[in-house]
Each structure stands twice: as C-alpha cells, then as structure tokens.
Amino acid sequence: MTKRIVLTGGGSGGHIYPLLAIADELKKIPQEIEVYYVGPRSSLQSEFLERDIPVRTILGSKIRRYASIGNVFDVPKFFISIIQALARLYTLMPDLVFSKGGTGAFPVVFAAWFYRIPVVIHESDATPGLTNRLSAKFSKKICVSFEGAESFFPKKKTVTTGNPIRGELIQASKIQTSERKLPLGFKEEMPLLFILGGSQGSVRINRFVLDNLDKLLQNFQLYHQVGSANVEESELLADSMIGQLDSETKHRYKMAGFMSVREMETAYGAADLVISRSGASDIFEIAAFGKPSILIPLSESANDHQRIDAYEYAKGGAAVVVEESNLSLHVVESQIGRILNDKDAYAAMSAAAKIFSKPDAAKAIVGVISGVLGLTSTSR
Image: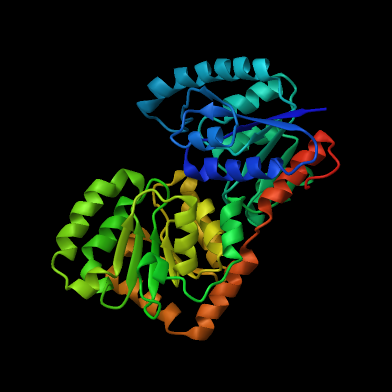
C-alpha cells in the first residue's frame, strides 16, 4: 500500500537542502512512497520539482517573541497560513509529516496534529528554535543533529541522527584524488582557502576578504563563495582590488555566487582549509569532507544558534571559532598559519571533523520515519 509523506520546513538552504537529502533517501524504501512539499514559497523549491515532488505553498510568517512592527503583518499571515495548511493537508491527507523546522513549518505541523497525522521533526541546531520547541509537543519522534540538543526534548522520543546533507556531497567526500586544485585553475602546491558564506552569502565575511584581498593572496589561493545576493557588489569590489595586482597573483582568486552541488563538491575537495559561517548544514558538510575550518558565527542569528553550534563543533577539535568582533586580518592569518603550518595539528583537526560527521544522517532519519509508519526496511 502506497504511503504518502509531506515534507515541510523554512525556505532557506539550511532547511531545504536537508529536506532534499531526506527525499532522496525516501526513494530507497522498498514500499511505494509519494512525497510532497508543503511550506512557504522558496527560491529553492524548483529542487523539489526536479525530483518530481509536487509543491504546495502556504504563506510564510515569522513568529517573534519580542515587540516588532513586523508582527503587525506577520500575525495575520500566521493565522492565514494555518488555514492554508489545514486545506493542503485535508486534500493530501498524508500518512506522515516530516518537519525540518524554520519559518512556515509550524502551521503544517499543527494541521497534521489536528488531523491526527503522525509528525516527525528534525532540529539542526544545538539549541532548538521556537518552531521546533512548539512542534515537539505534537511530534511522535524528534531527531537532533547535536547530542546536546537532546536535553531540550523528551528523552523517550528523541534520537541523535546528525544533520542530513545531500547524497552527492557524501559520495564526493569519499573520493580522494591527487590533483584537486588544477580543475579549478589553482596551483596544487599553494594552500587553497574555501571561503563560504552560506546560500545567501555573508556581507561581513565578503567585505573582510575583499578589503584584505591583496594581503591574503600573498600566501594563499582563495575560492570565495559570496552568495547569490551579493555577486554584483562583490565583483565591483574585487575588480578594483585585483586591478592593482600582478597577473600571477590575480589567478589566485576565484569568486562564485550561488554554487551548484557539483561546484560545492569540487571546492570542498580542493580546499586545504574552510572559512565559513556556522550554520548547521555548513558545519556538517565541512565535517563530511574532513576539512579543518575557521568558523565565524553570524552574531544576529536567531537564539544565537550559530555561535552555540560553532563552539559545540569546535570543542571536539575540528575547528576554531573567530567572533565577528575579532574579525581582523591579524587574527585570521594567525589562525590559518597555526593550522596549516603544523601537520600534526592539521591531521588532528581533520580526524576530529570526520569523527563528528554523520554521513548516514538521512538514512537514520528515514529509519525513524519508517518505524513510525510501521515499514520493515529503509533501503533497497
């Protein structure tokens, strides 16, 4: 008998990409499965359509626990989204709802509870967000990425699975080649820094890199992901800086906006060191490739989750954390030198990253989903 599963989550890459990993793993279940996405409109929803997963949108709204003019608009939108979610699930009437949390997910979870549809949720961060704190009350099972997050939820229905990342990245992380940098146009013998700001990019990290581009390129090659929203501004700044450099040095810098999975595979594989924001998806991708990293938490992240996630990851020895208030050339170069110039320290950080990594997270979560649905197997 065919089982119908609805996926839901906020519209950012940190929510959508794990849902895609879950969708891909669900296809491996021997039983017939129909998968749908119900949630707020997202620029990434085409990823579902490419997998033949129908999309049903509802209004997105942010639940704030503080006074804000935004509540004037979002509170009515929230109640409208509840009605929309009730209508979407009434039409689909799935056997289970899987929620990744984030803005827009709670109305779908509430609608599932209203119809007595089982709910499984996943929390990416070491400290749960408001959506998943609320959703936990309506859930059969709760999956978490960080072991420390278990303490926020009922013990009997919580399991640590890690954070699901895309299968293509998992496969690429297992392949080691002697020539990694040449396909990108970089020299093999010179250290390559992969600077990653997340799917939307980071203005502060971008400005730091571009303001210090001439100095950084003296000793390193840079593959710089600026984010799709920051390409034009970053290109203008980069052009003004690169124009002052000699022809050899210019070739040490490469910029990208939004990066495809294939481009991410190549960049992670080629990098000697990753400098990144500390979203949960970024951390687990870096860990999967076993790359030492310098994490720069976004200071305005909800519940300060990026800072908490960064230190939770770093305490195992896989990364160092540089606060935005300490983001200076001296501090960053000092940390890069400490990591790259000590082979033993580098190897220890790489090993710690691999130990932290949970490449079978998507499979573990689908195993939980299968258990709730009473299915016998999670793989073909």
